[in-house]
Length: 495
Image (cartoon, rainbow, N blue to C red; front, side, top):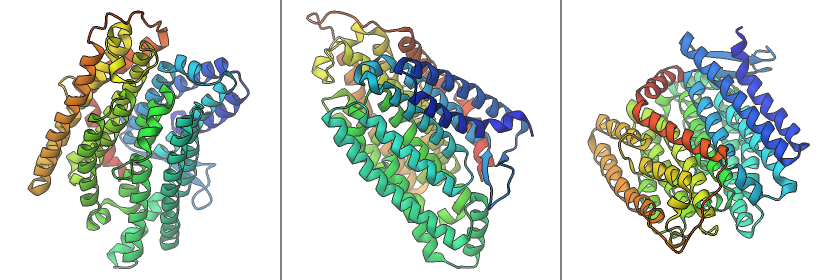
């Protein structure tokens, strides 16, 4: 076995060990340690992606070299490699870019705890990407849930207490539904490995056995993961969770946590239940409807906000709707567009939250639009970052969001019939609404305010993070074919 094939398992263990080490380090040293680890993880994930691109084949890694059911498995293909690289990069930029706000928003004695949570979160994200075992997936769902709740709550205010409570209540309901679904599926199939489950489900479906229990399993898992990923109408926890945490927490939650659950849902569709069985149960139609509603109603709610971070939060409801609409369209291009949008939205939304905090910093820490006039001049890096993120969300050419919308339109045209018209109209309406609230915000931060003076003292990590975010958005807009081809090859391996 090639050394690189060990990296996914090593990365998960490294994150867990790093969490323990960070707990005994002071805040500043824990920060340096965590940033170093994330850089190493990014490099190792890049090596894994290069390896699977070179071989053109997925591989299975047996932990401890014990076969199932005694052992556990990791499965790595191109799509898993791409997602691991993206998640490691976004986590690194979110922690680096929000560093000075971590020092301001979190008590000094608890700053190392923030980095413990980041390490635990990173381990869960990588495990959900790589695992080939449903029980392992559930274990890391719970680690993810606990870490996410901690990231919200660690900024000790009354708002974060309420936000974390809402999140934990909704998320635990989702976890419970997923656990019941896994338990039922284990009872039906007698397996926990995804590949074995899929074989048994295909046999049962072909023989017409356990039709109702399988339907219940699909419903439980879809609803559970829809709650955890904040699909409309299960999004009630999202605005507060994204609005009141420290900047890095909001960037991580919006860009990575919700997306990891959507990615897990896709793994269940392709590698556990089987996409043919999913289509037979018309799951896509429901996801399509909820996605379209989320796109429009999320945008309407965002347009009505007077707080920049709540506006960005409600925008996430709309963008998650885009992803589910792409999944529900029922075409290959629609599915690829949904996966591409997971990446493009992660690159844009994390930058928006980091930039918004920088704009608030030079506006007496206010998040209200009326106080943000001229903030783009007082904090140039934050202004540029927010403007680029906003243009991407609207779908202006050259940026990541434009490419996503083109791919969604292609997927809709491929579908034909009523879905094509509904998807195209929803894309048009949502884009117009996005333009209204995002471009209005950009104009606000660049409206001169002579009575407000001063400028931000941005450190190198903040400016560097913004520049990399901007470059990533441009790359996804201009060089999207490379990513699209990798995603397409990954999906072919996925099943």
